Structure formats: C-alpha cells, structure tokens
Amino acid sequence: MSRLGRRGYTLIELAVALALLGILFVKLTMIISEASKAHREESAGMVLEDQAQQVLDRIAYALIGADPDSLNPSSQKPFFSDRIAFRVSLGVEDGEIVWGDPEVIGLAPDPAQLFWARNENTPDEQIVIWTRAVSELLQDELLNGSDDNVNGLTDESGLTFDVDGDSVTIRLTLVTRTKDGRSISKSKETVITCRN
Image (tube, rainbow, N blue to C red):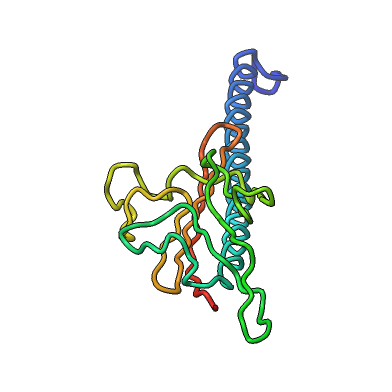
C-alpha cells in the first residue's frame, strides 16, 4: 500500500499514543496532588504560626504588668517552668499599690492545653483555655536529659517560662497534624520585662 493511499492510524500507533497520554495524565495528576499537598501544609503552617504569635502576645500582655516579686516560680537557668503565677497592679489607691487577684498561666493536666486562670483552686476560680495545640516538647528538643536546642535548658516542654530578675523569657511551640498525618510545628519566643 502506498503512502498516499494510507488513511488513519494503525492499532499499534493508537495503543502507543494512548499509553503516552495515560503516562502524561498520571504524571500531571501526581504533580497537581503534590502541589496541592504542599499548599495545604504551607497554609496550615501559616495558620499555626499566626496562632502561636497570638497566644505568645496574650501571655506577654498578661505578664508585662506583673509584679516581679510575685512571679512564681522565680527560678533561673538551668531551670524553667511550664506554668507561672503572678499578680498584676490594678493601680494606686491612697498612695498604695492595689494588686489584683492571683493569676496563673500554664499547661493543664492535658499538656496540649495552655490555660490562664484567676483565683486558681478557689470557689471564685476562673479558667480560660487559650489553645489546645501545645507541643509536648519545645521544637528541636528531645526528652533525653540534654540541651538539644542549645538555649541553656534541658528537656523543655512546649511552653516554658525562664525568669531572670524582672525579665521573663517565654517559649512556645504549637503543633498540628495534616490530613495525611504529618506533624507541623511552629515555635515563638519573646522576652518581656515586668513593669511593676
């Protein structure tokens, strides 16, 4: 049969073309799936980072008006605590500072929960959970008795308070899981100086 008289494609040519299209379609689907997964993880990371910053700001704002002498624990490096008790000045009356009720910020018995409380363990107790996403350990920290993240503290929990005089270093790591079970964590740190 001459080339001019031939019309259409042979069955083999069609099979090869369909196989190539199938491979191209599978590769394109894999690329779109990976890009979508990366976008979801990046979005989850950004949301988690925003949440960590908001919680850290809330803690700092609560502590900035605290009396440095009321901070408990008042321990310094190499010790830290995952909770801190304090009192805040409400103002001055008749030349005397008026102090508010005792407050606490820390991890609840369920370590993933970070809470604020006023008048803890009294009938007037008020408790608010600020987040339920605190990591078991601070980012880059392992439970091994060593200072893995090289900040002078060992085996830090996901929330730590390090008191140095009237300054408090606050470290926070939040964690979330993606739909496919991968873990994303974000850490924030700040140092505040108590004003009172």
